[in-house]
Amino acid sequence: MRLTLLFCFAVTAMVSHAAPQQLTAQQSTQDLPNQINAENCMVQYINKVDVPATAEGLLEELRFEEGDEIEKGNVMAVIEDDMAALAVDLKKAEEKEAILTASNDVNLRDAREAAKVAAAEAKSFEELRKEGAIPYWEMEKKRLEAGRQELRIELAEMEQKVAQVKMIGKRTELEMAEKELTKRSVTAPYTGIVETRLAQQGQWVQPGTPMASLIQMDILRVEGDIDALRYAGRVIKGAPVEVLIYNQANDGTRISGTLGFVSMEIDLNNRYRVWVEIQNEKVGNDWKFKPGMRAEMVIK
View: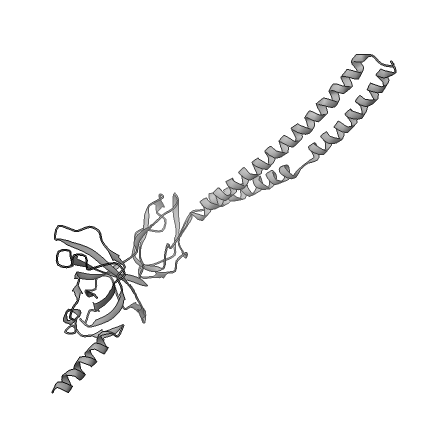
């Protein structure tokens, strides 16, 4: 009889450490010794968001239906983008013009050559003045003209620098126009299931208008409450956790994990919130775990 009891205990211990494992409702986590049991445990989604419109305009396309699985980055809807596309074309042309202007150094080269001519003339007039062939003011006039040509070089250099700055400005305007065009395509922020369609094709939308309710299903959480008085200081983030999730048939699946969060706030019932992330999996076209499923959580 004693050997039989030892054998049963060993089998029970091996079963309790398997993950995941199908269990019946009678084999709950409450049967485990030396454990901290969380209360009010339930499967919850991590991410659920009403995907908003990102621009103002007529909603031309809706590329989803309720129940569709949308990959992260996929286009869910298109807001009229004709004017935004034309604005991009215009900014591309303006940027090209700015590039050509910035790279054009004809004025600078002309100013440099003119300065050489003016300097040569000033030198000739200086020699003529030494010989007494011309009056002083003629020589001085040529010297001043040579100085003006040097200023023309500085002016041409400054104009070229200004043109380069304008080119950067036009490039930035193009990027802004492209960004505005991108905002006309509403994309999925993460991979998820469309729970509810909130907008209609042909509707006029504003930035922030909700279009669809999207739920992430590949990663979920099991949340529960811990008695702060009974288990004071015994529950820490990173502690090993065993979770039992019940399906509609009241059969349970046991999963081992790590406690991912311990709340610092204690509610009016002297409880604080904890949760553990779980990896979900598909069974056919459906998901194994769903938000709202009842669960049990044991912290070891």
